[in-house]
Each structure stands twice: as structure tokens, then as C-alpha cells.
Length: 578
Image (tube, rainbow, N blue to C red; front, side, top):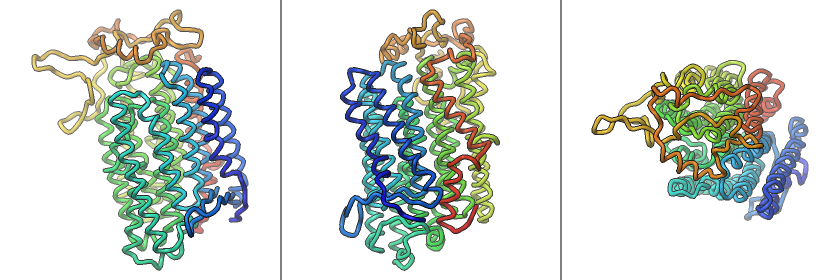
């Protein structure tokens, strides 16, 4: 690879950071505020995209900002691994910005200016994580990402949101401390923290105890945001945030920064060979295997759609970590390719969940019987992304999981292969009921949707249960699950029942009791045509774009730029052409 001095890495970081100022100044003019958001997103994607052709040809763009601390440069370095993450973050920020406009306006959310400003700051920090040239610079942007995303997690300002925000800070700042400690150990042992494809050579001659301790600290620190068990519990609680934030947390910035950090440690600090000789890869793979299976089982017990998606994310992130920890070139390709594959699929799923909430105020799967009639495009997209998450061919998840499977088989790790197969079956088990409920059930015949319900888990919150007197207690929901008729929709396609008061709607909903499932007339969904009348195109467009990206990565993976970048990363690290 050839290093070239360039300002493009720092410009990519600063574009969205600079946009915070005009976004805040345009708070009284929503159209202008969102125009600044979209302009910054387009500019950021353009800067990152301009480095892709050179990156594929072996050019590494470097911005050197001087000495950070003695012996450590504050530098940004756009190598293939950094470009992979930065391209994903900048592309999906643009998509999510359009979606956020539809979502935030659809619910007339409060503090929208703060929301868009924090969103821009989060993406700036994520790009900084991508282009950090060493562990200490990565630590700085890793912590800035936590600070920038906190207002998004606590956006609702309810007691529940504040509690989730505090838990998020406690976990992620604790992880940051572990990252810093691990980085200092690496520096003490080698005199450098600079990322080097194949690993830092001096680390091979360091004390093995110190090297293992440093790896453990780094893996635990990044493992917090990667949601490795038992460090995962902040993530489901963060679902109290607006759905676009959930997409940011689960598909783009936060959790992906965790797996990205683990990738940096394995590929560019230790290297596959040293990680194997120290035995740290097998230990990390065991943790990832436990996480991906157990999180899938927990997902079976969730009736709330966003919580089911949250535990699915916990499981799917461990696919990436497992692929990296197995240390086989094929598994490395699978793990790295699952970063964009999961991003497109999971963003589709969260976008669908958000559209359902905006249009129908429905959040629990057991209340979605027949909703495919009301939101056909949304639920088809959900079905396609679900197929990909389960590893069905022609969708992105199949390609990445194929490489993971053959990588674990090639490495002789049959236990990990079996775990991947079991988790794939569990994926079908917790996604199929959602699709089946939407298209093949009617409100009067629907059953409860935690697939597994027992004393160890099941319903969360106000679920149907029997009271002491034997009476049935129902979920607080609006007195109908159907959306308003066409005559009741405003000029922008939003339901008039929103009344410009998202919070007021929730309070009003809490005052109603959902009729029994047998009351078919009250629970019947209004049919909507397939021409987009189910929602605003600010939300439908991003949903269909993310779904299309999932299909492109599944049908023509060799022509998709993400797979090209992944192959180059693995070749640079291992010397093996995959």
C-alpha cells in the first residue's frame, strides 16, 4: 500500500461536525435545518466516496495533525478497513436523514433541532473512529461517539429514557476506560499503538502475559458496544430512543464501532498469527458463540418488536466477532462482510418498525395480525430483510454467513459451525411469526407472539395476563388498530390522528383498552394500496432503499464495492487472496 498525504480524511470527519452550527441556528426554520442535514450528509458521502477508487488500488490517505502525546501521532488514516466503515456510516446517515424527517415530523417530536445536531455529531465521531490511525486516536473518537449519542438515547426525556441514558453512559464509558488501559499496555510493551496490517511486529516479542492482558482489556472495552454478553444489557434498554436512533445504534454507528474496534485489534494490532499463538482468538470466539445463541433464544421471548430486533442485533453482532476470532481468511471475509450486510438488513427492519409506530401506534407483534393489508410495502420489506437475517439465499445475510460457515469448517472449528447453524434456525423462529402474523392472520384469530414463554422470561410491560380474579387484562392501545381513512390524512400523507402531538397521542392511547381479539370489526385493518399510500415517502423511500441494498449484496456480491474492499483487507492482512 502507498501512503499519500491528504486532507480528505479530516474533511470527512469535519463535514458533519461543522454542520452542527447551521443546524442549531436554523431551529426555527425546519426546512432549512433539514436542508443543512441533507447537504452535510451528501457532502460527507462524496468525500468518503472519492477515496474508494484509490483505496481499492492500494492508496492510503493520511492526515497528520502532529504529536498527540510523546511517541503517538494524532493522525487520520483512510485504509481499506477504515473506508469500509466510513463508507457504510456516511451512506446510511444520508438514508437515515431522509427517514428521520418523516419520522420526527410524523410524530411531531419535541427538540427536533437537538436531535438532528446530535445525529450529525454522532456521524462525525463514527467517521473519526473509522479513520483513526492508532489506538489512542481511536479511543478519543470512541468516547466522543458516546457523548454525541447520549442525547439521542435520552431524547424522550422520560424517567425511562433518562435511566436508559445513564445505563448507556455507565457501560460505554466503562468500556472506554478498558480500551484506554489496553492501549497503554500495548504502548508500554511495544512503544507504539499505530495500526499495522498483520499486527505490530514488536508485540510478538512482548511478555505473553502482558499481551494477553492488553487483548482482554481491548476486547472487553470494544465488546461493550459490540454487545458481547454479559456486557449487552444497555442495548435493549436503549430501545426507548426514537426508532431512527435505534437504527443508528444498531446498524451504523455505535454497535458497529464496537465490532470495528475488535477488527482493528485482531487485524492491525495483534494480527491473526499472534492472536492464534496467544490463544486469545479461541477465547473470544467462545464468548461470541455463547452470545449469538443465547441472544437468539431471548429474542424468542419478546413481544415488543423493537426489543426482539434489539436481541437479534446482539446475536448478529457476534457473527461478526466470531468470524474475526476464528482467524481463518474465509471467516475474516464473512465477518467483515457481515458488517455492511447486517447494517442494510437491520436498518430495513428498524425503519419498518418505526413506520408501523408512526402510522398505527402499534409496537407489539401480537397486535399486528393482518397489518400487511394496512402497510403492504413496509411488511414486504420487513419480510425480505428477515430472510436475509436468517441467511436465506439472494439476500445479503446469505453471502456473509456462507463465508462464515466455510471459514469455521476450514479452520476445523465444527462447534462454531454448529452454533451458526443453530442460530440460523432460531433466526427463522423469531422472525417468521412477525411475517406470518402480518400477512396470514386476522385480528380475531391471532395468538400471542412470544415464541417461548416461561418463568425465565416472556412478556415485558403491560401484556395480556390473568388477574387474581381470573379476568383478562388487555394492553393499553387505541380503541382501533386501523389508521384513519384517506379523507382524514393531511396534505403530507400523515394521519390526522397524530394531531401534531406524539406524546399526547401516547397518553390518549393509554386511556383506551384494546378490545378482545374476537371483536373483528373493531380490530380490522384498513386496506391500503401498493402505491405508497400507507405512509409518507420520506419513510418508505429509505425503507425500500435499505431493502434493495440487502438484495444487491445478496445477488451480485462480487460487483458490490463492499465485498471488494473486504477482500482487499483480508489480502493485506493474511496475504491470501479470497
